[in-house]
Image (tube, rainbow, N blue to C red; front, side, top):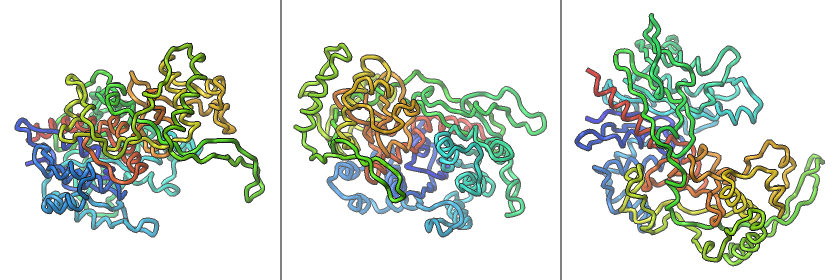
Length: 539
């Protein structure tokens, strides 16, 4: 029988997708997700659809699935065609907020209801796996820098204590193994007394201890392991393996993921299981070019053109800039003529014969489904079978944002600069180039925002795809100058190693947010194989 999994804070299902992809010698799934919990409605819809797909053996999705993603039939038509499979998926994917309900979130549920659902899903199975991680914004290095905080206070930000809900579920339901993921800022986050990471390690090793006065539960202990380093020594009394905090930091680019995503991942094994887990095997560097270069070329839509600004007084009498724009229809000829004219001004700067021509700019705007059979990866590509689904006959979520005309200029300049010089330009390079490329922000020349516009280097792993990609694309500029745009949802999903047939619900902003928040499924797949090897040794 498959090993049961409960997935908390599941997002769109990156961890679950990886674990669900682990197969045994007979090509049967080793793990089965019994319950996945996620509070965001769009991520929940994504989870439910992916669970629906897993109800079909050997990933042989029904033709109606491809009809749905291509826009031929509705979601209701798909689910109504397979009511049994839909009911299984709806039972698995649960849209609620963990924790006791309060006035700020009507979607919250009680601990009693959570425990009931988990117990029903596990059906008395003792050896199962808990995966997921609490919301990590409170631990984020960027977030803490923005708030000028070095000490995190649970009374001020309840997300700091949300890992305790994860901990409570470990204490009550006692999984054989758990996998907990969080941002690297967790390693340096502090309370007034000591480091949050030390507190979390101590709690996870003895998860029942914080709850002895609240609930009657039998004690359980766990050994916490790194997935990148073997332990050098063990505690003589507890047998706990000893690791340095940095040993728990997983650098995804070392394991076949085309992205420099660095996350803290903890593997906990119940202390009655006397097995030392393997560690992840390093892989050659996977590059951005290798995973997105074969996708159909796109151009950006056009929103408006920046003209000038004027100083006005706000409601408090303070001076502020009011920017003046010329609203433009998304007319291809306007876009083409303006960029071709701008291109001529840049050629001498780069001492280059490279220049745009009309054929470069004739690519499409893209859409939620682009029908094409021309984006297959090379046969020798290590992730070809991971990404590719021949029955899809196209590509999902491959549509560019519409950009401000001046940003299109900046993207074209930045990508050309990167192509010629091997690195993306800093703010002073925009100033030197003239042509209005330097933003009019007061701090543009302060040096604090030198990487405000960042081209993803084609022959390196990408920088971390975060949820901020949903806000703007300045940090995720495509390396191809002729496209002069930010990455699409599908390009971000490829960098995150989501399979091409993975469908994300919601508008484009919601889709970017889901992709940016996820654990790369291919990394989760490798972690799943390590967990499988532990279960293979359980007597």
